Length: 118
Length: 112
Image 1 (cartoon, chains in turn yellow, brown):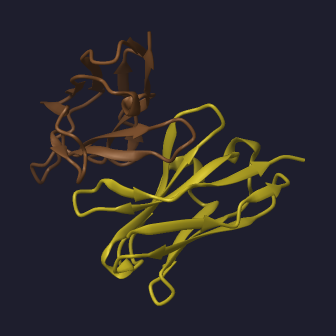
Image 2 (spheres, each protein chain N blue to C red):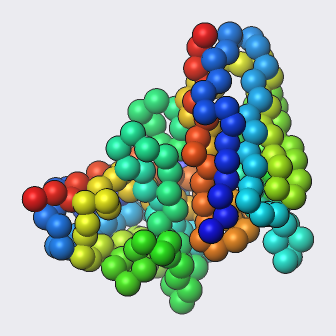
């Protein structure tokens, strides 16, 4: 059974950093691209970042470029999102998702909440 | 950026009815490789989103055949025949053809 479990969320002050993790199991992690998708409170979904199977290619939405870094450790079956220079508008639930070969998010984690506030 | 416009924003339904959701893109979603990366997701209350349809009309594993995706170019539709209680929630279309990838604003399927 495919499982994605996020961790690392919490309350953080503006300008500070946070690192999210997503532990994957039930599939060969190194064979799949991965992504982060966020959802601000009461709002819709937004794609945040994606990473290729080996980690060599990364992609970001404009609003997080230069502040967020997506990475992965295939030996540990774990996806990461390093979030720096956090802003109040980054407040959201962050979901880890697996990318199928058809470029769809075929499995999702339960989400982790990030609140940026002083 | 590609803008995906979903209509209606809310769709009141009676169980057993058919529902239809439109997703219109600000530009064609045909990729240079010939594929059209238009997907549909359902987010049930209090849950993570789940994949329903990929590449316009392909149902994901385990998705009932009452969910039908169609369309081409920049105009797409999700039809749900015989709405059941577990179909209620917010539906999102999503495109992975153009960078940055974008979601539609969502359509809430709710009981009348």
